[in-house]
Amino acid sequence: MSGAAVLPADEERGASRQLLRLAEISVVAFVVSILVLKPLVFFWWPDPALLVPGLVTLALVIPLLLLIVGPTMRGRPPAAPRATLAAMVVVAIAGTAWTGPEWSVAYGALGLAVLLVLPAPWSWVAFGLVVLSAVPLSWAYGAVTSSDQVNIPIEIGRALAPYTMIRLIGLLRRLDAARAELAVRAVEQERLRVDDALRRTVGAGLGEIAAAGAEAAADHRDADLTGSRLRALVTRSRSTLAEARRTISGLQRGSLRSELDTMASLLRAAGIDATVDRPPDGLPEDADEQVRAALRSATAQLLRDDVRTCVVTIRDDDGRVVLDVTADGVRLISEVRRS
Amino acid sequence: MIRVLIAEDMHMIRGALVALLSLEEDMEVVAELDRGDAVVETALRVRPDVAVLDIDMPGLDGLSVAAQLHETLPDCRALVLTGLSQPGNLLRALKVHVRGFIVKDAPAGTLAAGVRRVAAGERVIDPELVAVALETGSSPLTAREGDVLRAADSGLPTEEIARTLALSPATVRNYLSNAISKVGGRNRIDTIRIAKDAGWI
Image (cartoon, rainbow over all chains, first blue to last red; front, top):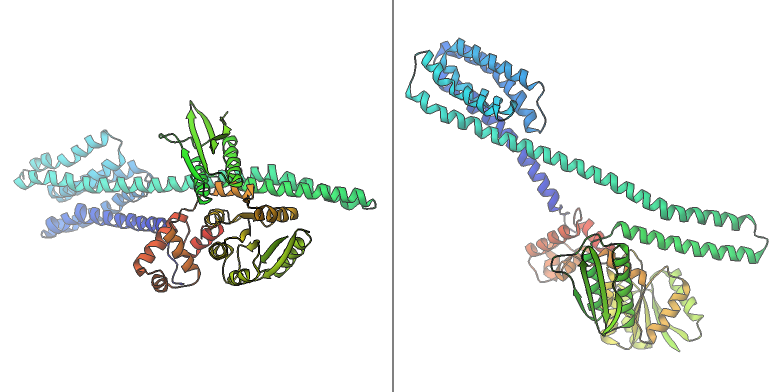
């Protein structure tokens, strides 16, 4: 036999996790290179007077920005986000005062932090103010150029692109975590249900068997009495076994639709011309045990009696499941209702 | 007198079945076998009325034997002994005209009564088996996916399965992938186990 194949769902899950990691790395690379390093290369590097203050302020801004971006992408709130944002504002003001209006090209990073930290709609107002502040700043320094005006929409785009990605990645992470949490809860509830079902049925039955066995073993001088006790023990054991099977089957129970489909398959495989009429708008999934028991009983009876044709009709009558089974024109079961 | 052939690979169980049915005044055990692939040949020679077949036998499984018996010796009716853990086998059994389908741990009297009823032309299906089959649901696999899984279960590599079933290796891999997805197995081996346990292959 060749190598084992992996369940596609697992493959997809693994691929989506890898994609998320790749997206995280891409976002961090984008933020650092476009929002922060690009000003360094294009504006500060050619001017040695701006290079040192630019590097110093960058060394402060990058970790502060990542303190906000990192946890947000993992679906967690950043630690002390407002203090981090305030520190970024201080660095931006200091950087601007130190290097002049050229530092405003790194305001996109500050705008992104504002969008991630402040609640909407104030975050958008603050974002607009941060990005647009480059214009009055340039005026204040008396250095209005056409490129300043053109750069504003570009800066907005540079901040919004990673913002959207960061929010989406964070949302996906939270969804993943919520799904995992739900799965754990479902398993816990299922365990409790199984435990309860087994304790009520099999547990009680085994207890009775043990008691009956102990009684039979305690006094075996009277052969007739012992025989009678052992026969009762066998009967109880069989009934407990049947109960255990029913319980286990109940735990694996599928939908009523699935039972009807299987019923039709079994009957047709036995050469019976079986028709199943069911409502076009679907069946209730939680039809009670009475309906299911009637279906099983009807199937066993139809197979045993070797009928030629049968019609199974099931419908939802104002919240009640109504079942009719007719075999060779004779009504077998009628009107089993959900209470 | 009902002539009975018994095929069961486990020696002690076969012995018990022979002893049990030999006690019945209206039954005669005319052959006992421990392999599935020897049943048809023996049946053609001894002409039994009822063949009591274990579902899992070396050589050929009980349901395949029943299908061959129906083809070659239609008068011989098959009664298959099975476990409740493989409810999906009921559908396959009905398709291959098995007349009796009884769980192995049923009370002793059930087998003799079942043989009598099957010999009389009735169909004997354990109601508990029907209930479990309904609850488990029918096989989600298509016939071809079942074929590919059966071939994979016999240990054949993908290329060999493709050659045996006159398919391309890519199609075989596609069928296997679909089967894994439908059954919900972790891998090919797990899928084969689930499908076998449910009686789908």
